[in-house]
Image (cartoon, rainbow, N blue to C red; front, side):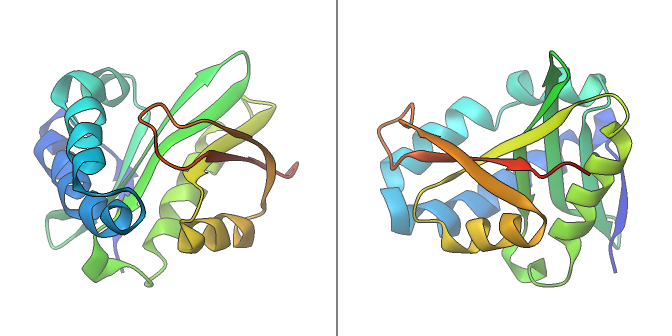
Length: 158
């Protein structure tokens, strides 16, 4: 099983590698290679990751010294938004995503009133995972890059 812990600044390269390895198999079938290239360039960068990393809002899953999964969130007005939750393809189905999300929920449950997240419409495995974790759909929004709608979900009150 993976060790789940708060990320450290020296985990940055491993965190970014999770994005580079998970985005193509996850999103190319749904939205194509150009969307994936644009998304990686926009959201999987040191500049986009370091603020959360430095604020203690990134969790990682580590196996044998390798980062194999990550979760990142932000909090505003007592609402936590899980921005990223990814596990390397070879490590999926082993409970790592559940452990990462549970770690985030436990870390913030006393400081927020709600936890929300979004997945891309058509990403059936993500939707089923989040539903198993207790999230319910609340609304949909148009995707910033022109992909399918973002399906927003909220965790039922814990």
